[in-house]
Length: 381
Image 1 (cartoon, rainbow, N blue to C red):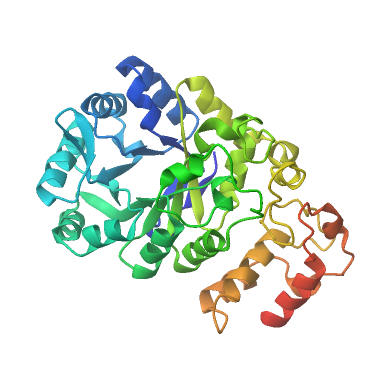
Image 2: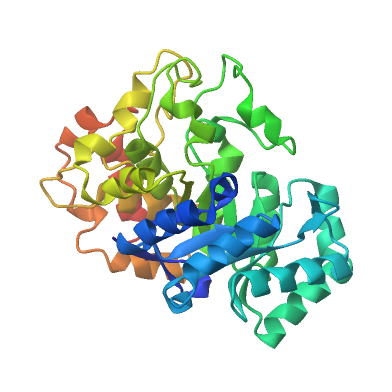
C-alpha cells in the first residue's frame, strides 16, 4: 500500500480508504470481516458519516484494540432523530450525536472532524455564521477532533472552503462522470440518466478547484469514486463505456490534491478488488485511453489530465508532474515560491525536453506537450 500526505494535516493516509456507508446494511460480523481485510491490506483511513446507531457500534467493535492503526473521519451535524438521519447545525443536537459517535467508536477523539455536507450557499452560511462553527472549534481546542475537514459535492463550496483557511481538508465526490458537470447544489443532477450531449472534458470550475486545493495544501479524500457503480455498466455510464474499479481509482488519484479514495465495500472481495490498484500494470490503470475513445462525451481534448499516458520520456522527464506544476504556477500573477520549490525538486525539468514529440503520439487527448514544455521552461527559468 502506498501512503500520501493529506495536505496541511500532515497525516499519512493510504491511497485506498474505506468509506463506511455500505456497512449500514451488514451485520456486526460482516462489518468486521470487511474492516479486518482492509487493515490487513494496509488501509488506514475510514469515513463514518452515518448516524445510525448500529453501524457506528459495529464499526467501533471491529476497531476495538487497534484504534491507533486507524485515521477516522467523523461527521459533525449528521444526527439520529426519531429513528432517522437528520442533517442539522443545531449545536446541541450535534453535540449529542458527536458524543454518541465517540462512545460507539470506543475512542476519545476523531482524527478528522468533518463539517457535514455543505452543498449550498445557505448551508455554508448556516454552518459558518452561527454557533455551529463555534462548537466545531471547541471540539478542536479540546482535542476531541485533531483536524477540521468538510464534505461537499459542490466545487463552488469546496473553493470557498479552500480559500477560507479554517478547513484543512475536504471530502469531495470525484469521478470522470461527475467531473463533466458544472457546479450544482443538487446532487441528483450527478446521477441523472443522461447528461447533455455537448459536455466535453472536465468542467473548468472543477478543474480549478482541484488546482486550488493543491495550491492551498488542502488535501482531498474521495467519495463516490465509482459514481454509485454506474461507471461499471456501459449502459448506465455517460460515456457509453464501462470502467473498472482500478481505472476509477487511478482517475481519482491523478487529480491534484487527492490523497485517498474512500470506496465503499460490501465484502472483503470488493476491498481486494480496490487494493489491486496497488499492483496493477499501467495498462490496467489506463482510464485515459478508454475515455478518449468513448462514443459519448469527449473528454479532455487538448487538456492534460495528468494520466501519465505520455510515458516513457527519453529525457526521463515526469511530464505529468511538470504539467501539474505549470498549471499551478499560472494560476497566480507570479510563480508561488512553494510551486517553484516543488518543480525544482524534480529530477528532470522542462528545459531538458528534446522536442521529439513521441509523448504527443501517446497522449489520448491531443495535448501539445512539447509546446507546454517550452512554456514551462520559460516560466520557471
